[in-house]
Structures are given as C-alpha cells and as structure tokens.
Image (cartoon, rainbow, N blue to C red):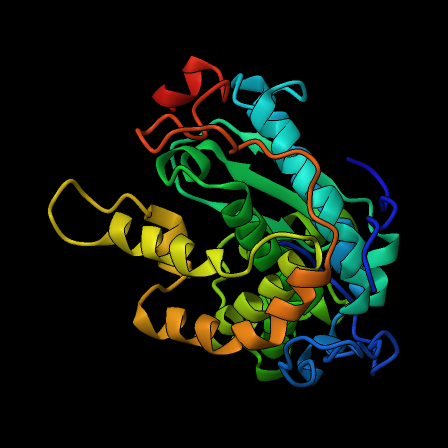
Length: 311
C-alpha cells in the first residue's frame, strides 16, 4: 500500500535522529471531539529525537526486511487472500490516524504479510506494517480481531512510543553509541543502520501497551470493526500462552505484549467510550471471516502458501 487512502463514509520500532529542542514536537489531540478514549499527553522525551530521521531509518529497515523475506520465499504475494484482507482492513483504519498524529497524513503506508510461524505483528514509525502468518492462522483471527491487533500496532507508531524510548535513552545516557547517534554525533548511513539494529530489541512498557490497546480500540471502532473483539482477542492470546505443555506459542509477541485479566478489564471498562463510535461508523462491505465455520478452518483458506507452515 502507498499513500493515505480516502476516508470511508461514516455517519457523523526502528530509527535514528538528531537533537531538536522541541522543534518537531507536534501537538496531537488526545480526545476526539465526538468521543473516544483519553490517554493523556504524549511524552516530552519523544521531542528529543527527530521524527524525520526516525521515519527514514524505519523505511530503510522495512525495505531490508522485505528483501530478506523475498529472498527466502517468505513474503506472501499481494494477490493472496490474507494479504488482501490485511490491506483492506488497513485502508479503513488509516484515515483516522491523523487525528492522533498529524504526521500520519504524510506517511507512505505499507502493509505486508510474512510467512512465519511466530505469533507477531508490528507497525514501524512512518506506517510500515507487517503481520506474521502465525498470528493470523494459529489464533484464527476474525476481521474484527485483526483490526484490533492492527489498531494496537498502529497506535504504537502514532503515539511514537519507540521514539519516546530512544529519547529517554539519550537523556539518561543509556548506551553511549546510541546516545551519540541521537545527538547527531554519529556518521550518516552507519548511524541509521546501527540504530535500526538496536531498535529491533526495544520493548514497550506496560503503560505503552495499555495506551496502544485503548487507542487501537478506538481506531478499529471508527473503522467499523467491533471493539468488543478485543476481549476475544486477548482471551485467545491467554489461551495460546497458558499452561498445558506444548511450549509457549506466543514467542516474541507474548514477550512484549502482556496478557491477563487486567488487560481485558481495561478494555471492557473503556468499551462505553468507543461503542457509540462503532455503532455510527460505516461497516465494511466485505468480510473475509463470514461463512467460515468454527471447526478450525478460519484464516486458513485460501491463506498463505504451504511453505509458511515450515517456517
């Protein structure tokens, strides 16, 4: 996908930067005028890092990721039903992103599906989205649940959580090489590549995760997807990572996205704020999960090539 799509009819982690003393700290609304969630102000630490450099490095890292996936025959084709599904859901969510971050209106959005058994998804700064087939297939996600995951990941980018963490590292001197790069003391291309690699290991805190849950729930609701699906989504996550042997299926996603009753309670507590948005939103005219049985075939046909199961 490229560019920002038209808004649907409605009724109503990787980068570098230079020190800018608040120059790029764009004000973003935290509460839409017609309702929604309130998550407070964005951290001032993100203002220590250049948004342009963050997004430039993310673009480079994303392109490298796609190139590597393509070389391993692990980039699911654009014509695949699951790729089409992800991009169609993104098309409905993206028009509402600029309400949370004005820069999002200029992002060159991309959505791709990678053939990988890990239960994982992410959105890099600048709107670079990737889902893994393991997430969609193992959890048998409905369209509403896909929208909740996508909204959550997009929310991390909109609220600039990675940029905030980089700013905190620079301000506190955690990692001399990282701090030097953020303060513009590194050299060009090497800095972008080096910081990009370090950012692959960044993990968001519980506050970031809770904020992304709520913002993502609002984005999904405005796009016409049922925010109540957040409860079923995280119930599935809990089931997948629960006891009973067989190993931890959540792997990377579970390590950075804590589950549990508290998370579900927070979602339920905020449903009254977003259900009115969902009720008056235009609903998708096409669904990929309609007509699928509960016998385990959801999200498997005609999903990714058979090779994905071996990766």
